[in-house]
Image (cartoon, rainbow, N blue to C red; front, side, top):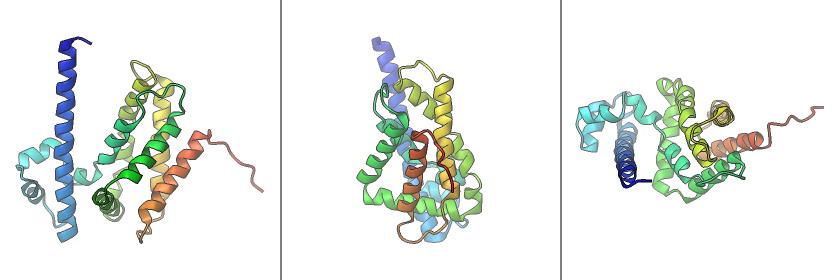
Length: 210
């Protein structure tokens, strides 16, 4: 890679990190306000003020108030934490192991924020209705990351299909999870997702039913 290309890559990486930091700050302040005064009563202006940015800056990172909750910071963390190469490795198994590692190593505050976000997604109709489409929108990014780690210059049909299958399984797990939000619900939901991904890893083989 030439010096010019390395510089461009570094600039792009810095820009992405800055964007991710701004989005995380806005989401953290938004969740705090939602907890204190409710989702409906909280305005974009209040979120922006709490994060120390202008309304214009808010809309630079999120199109709507709902998008602040729908944005999943963990998605990017999972993709970044995947092994640099997946050649000779089952990609679904690598993904499952990466998710487990990130969950186990997450700080208590991050786990609490994830739980708050999940509660909102399941209890606010406006948010709940948008979750499947929001998850489906991650397919191209996942396909790109899988292709790169499988040694391809761009996603081919099998890689895109794999990305779609993984996200489809995640959507199925989310939509079939019980709405019981009692203590431990995040652990139950994550175990369901891991069980569903395990089926995909095994080839979704069917068992004879009596």
